[in-house]
Length: 397
Ligand code: NAD
Ligand code: MG
Image (tube, rainbow, N blue to C red; front, top):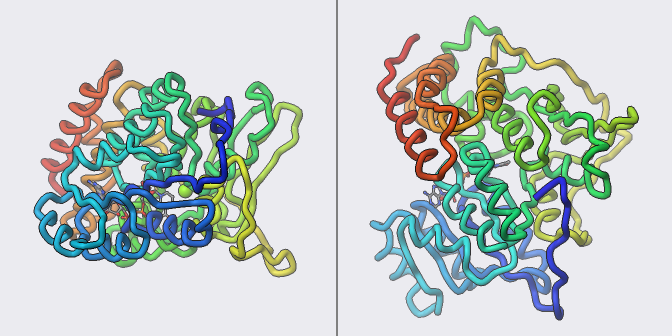
């Protein structure tokens, strides 16, 4: 794991890299399959996993013919099994089967399940020494220290897919760790960057999931609207790059062209730029340490500007400071933050609470945190308790 940017062990022969896609029916999972389809000689999809959408998973499996297709929702097993009869694709179901996919025989595991549900298979892949193309930021938020320790032990390389962290990763290649002064994560500011905070209670789920620059799953879209996404990304960066919270900054950059910046001790900075398109960081992760030619959109520098930057408004978007506070507290505080946030986002999407209730529920859930939970079991206990508190909280608006 970074900042020790070890390339994966040299590959022997010209076999395609075997790829597992966890969360294949989601926004990142589908785009990972699109990237894999561009490179049939270099990438072979060997296993797919999804939550409940068995029809889409069956379509994907018929198209790419993996060895295995796993559906987390066991009640959908007969449907998926019937749909894939005669294809030669082995069908499994359940959370344990999803977890074990982390360690199937493969080169790269794309971790693109949403939420803390992605932790177990991600940890399994890291323990098995796989290269992990990590989109599931929540696994580092919940258990960053455990994932890091497992990577050190197994030699697994975690290559970020999150666009900001892919940018930082690319800027850090070839740089000694002690040359890094500060990481600056850019944030679009989300759909409510310019909205009067006095009207936040009237925000609807449809307004919150309509992101100005990116088309993403519902949960991360709401996280972008509250700026909890950026808070989770600060915690993700701390574990990916070993840089403490006080040396990680956030700046709002509405155009989403500068994907993040590394400042070095000599006053020089490097940024990674490009049009907002997740297929680029996905491909960077799947091809690392190589780069493969592809026709993804290029930036047209004659029309790219103006590029603007502004401070984040921490009053209208309190989730950002809640995440910094959880990171400073350490222990299981980030796990509690994440769990309560997952419940709060689900309740908001269900119309059960208002938009300003989201940070309130997160604060309520953070009462579950303890400063010394350092085993997976202890972290999962905190996750459960934070969810209970966030579910039990009345809405405040
Ligand atoms: P999504 O909601 O579109 O897809 C989530 C996927 O996870 C689906 O395939 C779903 O079936 C699967 N899933 C859900 N619960 C599961 C379970 N218990 N077991 C197995 N599979 C399960 O989400 P997304 O937008 O693709 O985001 C996925 C992850 O990537 C998130 O952690 C998100 O923060 C991160 N990410 C996404 C983007 C983006 O552009 N979408 C960018 C950066 C990071
Ligand atoms: Mg991001």
